[in-house]
Length: 458
Image 1 (cartoon, one colour):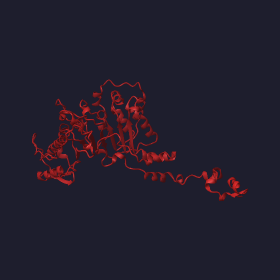
Image 2 (cartoon, helix red, strand yellow):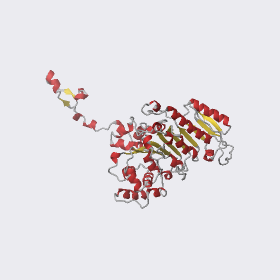
Image 3 (tube, one colour):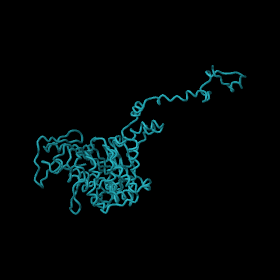
Image 4 (cartoon, helix red, strand yellow):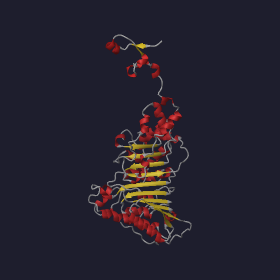
């Protein structure tokens, strides 16, 4: 039997009559006409989960911080921001789509510490606790390949200070790495906060003259076995929720020598440190004597002003180090050249790749000539150590050196000519890259001996 619907519009115009349902246009059919059709799922919802996940995989894209230039530009807090987020949009369509996209969404996780989200937590570990519980609840421990921690602001007596004065940062790092095991850790934070997170001392007296809002520190490790959740996590969780927890009787300085630090938490193999721009300090009186806020001296174990020394904080497993600083002072860069860790590869970039030199606000009262003189002095220190014959200290282990400033053709050509004349084991592999042939072991010179001094010119 065919169902008929009275078309009142047609009746009004042409008189009484009936119209077959099959002849009605779709826009005139009421929703109640085909309830059976409405019950049918859209074709995409008929796909099995495995195929749906594979389709979502095509929406996946590299994280913003993985681009070639991202970590080599002037540091900023928007490093991980992206306007292209199709996976996030897809996750909002339905519960099923959300469930299938979660593993992709959490491949590259980030945790942001802002002033507005500190008020409900006593310590940094308490703040990160809900994220860790979410990972456990959804069985995502194996998923994160990278973890980014962004600390947007460092103020007196803030959540980082409370963390240091109670548990110390050992509990924070152990709590995270007991749950997830990312191959990459990226920290975007003001220098003072970065120092606290890494147990490095940071000199802040001259910080006002540098105007650098944040630094980048990236640590990478080889793929390790699947992370396992221990009872330790549950124990720390309960303690972290207790607002009445009291710190130990030891001072934070004493605890630093006893606790497991970030450098010990994983066998890191690569380190990238971007300390941003030093340019504003050149507008101050006797800029060369300014001491920047930096973890670099403690990282490599540089001597203190009073001559005292301590061992380097850098993980002994790190064999690849990249340093980026835009026109650092020679006195600061010397901490690295004089205390170079044992490395296989060293990357250095001392000149910005953006248009900062054309920014009148940032170059106000700065003499460009001073910038290039300090750059040349920094490279002179490095080249003297790098191309010594025979090499001294840890430089004898170095296999590759890359300059991120090879775009300065005059300086690069001079470096190439110097290496060719030096008659040592270093060879030019490609633009900006020197490699060393170590088939023949070279004797280490007596203490105090140095090779010829090489200087860049601009």
